[in-house]
Amino acid sequence: MVASIVGNYLVAKDLITAEQLNDVLREQSKVRVKLGLIAVAEGLMSQDEADRVNQLQAIMDKRFGDIAVDKGYLTEGQVESLLKKQGNAYLAFAQALENQQLMSIEQLEQYLIDFRCENNLTVSDLEDIKSNDVDRVLRLYLPVEGEKYLPMAGIAVRTLMRLVDTELYPMKAAMVTELEADNGAIQYVEGNPGIHCGLAAKENNLLYTASVFGQEEFASVDMDALDAVAELMNCINGLYASALSKEGISMELMPPEYSDRITKVTSGEMLVLPLVINGCKVNFVMAIDNKIEMN
Image: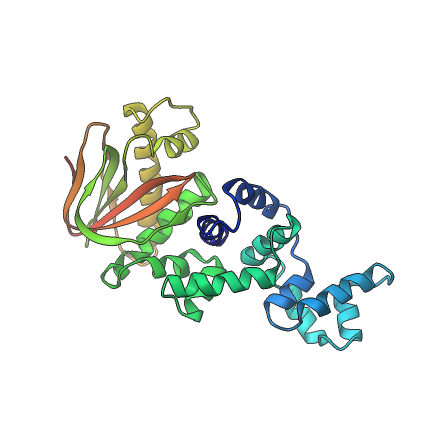
């Protein structure tokens, strides 16, 4: 998620192209983050010091950390701590950018200062994004009055990332009473409180989601495609009900409703969380103790 959020910001600012971002995302999946990059990102070494250690590795049969300790750049404790961070998603993204010779970690960090200011984020908020933790990231995109939807939204986004698109990312959510949409699937989960939730979108924006989850190449978002989306909602809500059952809360899933002939989705009050899935905007809608209807 962090790679898509930051990567698309870099594309929007013309710092990299969309094609280069795709290359970086492919590269990220196979990179092992170098210890020097992590040390620079953590502010423990300068880029020059990291480059010097890398040069010494070419003539010394020693690991980066051992040389850095010998040179007095790092302590053994710092090396041990850095080694534990090699699986960090943000740093893997930074490493992939560097491997593709697009920018250094220092340059990326400078661009993120602009990103933070433009989006009115605090330093702590930026660390939440870098953490790649879905709940920490989503909290930044929900309005204050939408905080109660975080558990449901978190389960939905994690499920969509696992089953549909690992690189999806959120946009700013809002509390509304109406959403323009051409198609969608809604399900009611009965309980105390009850919750309506679903996926709705314009035109063929749900096509990729339906095709990947349904494991079938749909030509358009017709009723067959929406049947797959409805089954996806069953999956998401089943996980939500299972999580609540562990807290002693009983929920019952009602059959999903879906339609390819709507103009809007309405409710007395609902949270609309836009998600960019494979480049297409898809809305995850939720309403607690309010009915969601497709009209």
